[in-house]
Length: 127
Image 1: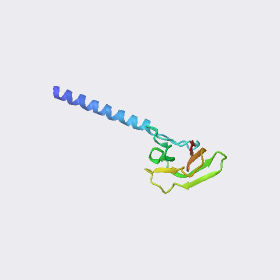
Image 2: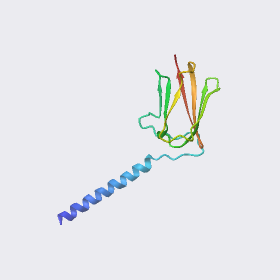
Image 3: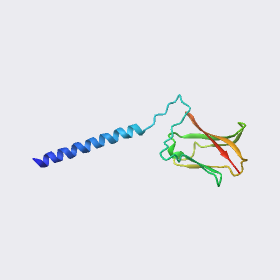
Image 4: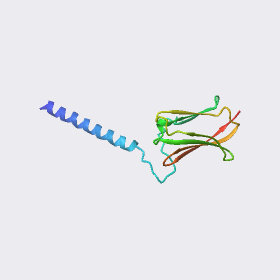
């Protein structure tokens, strides 16, 4: 009798744990609002965007971005496009590198576009 009660309690606890895991998984998924221009980013440790100031390379981790990206455009502080690249054919687990070694010092805007929105980041390149 005690064995049956013990097994019932273990089964009940296991089921509760499983249901709790399902709720957490649903809460962690981000829903893309097609009317918004913001693309959801899963920034666990905030390593989606990283600028290595010494080497002047800007890293973008596609795996933490919740949609497939179509292109990237870099604009200078005057709004002129200084770099443009298509991204649609790259794997979703790519770590994309923007090399700013040949760019002048100043502020730049990086625009990552998907088919439903855009991510914009501003960076400053110093000598």
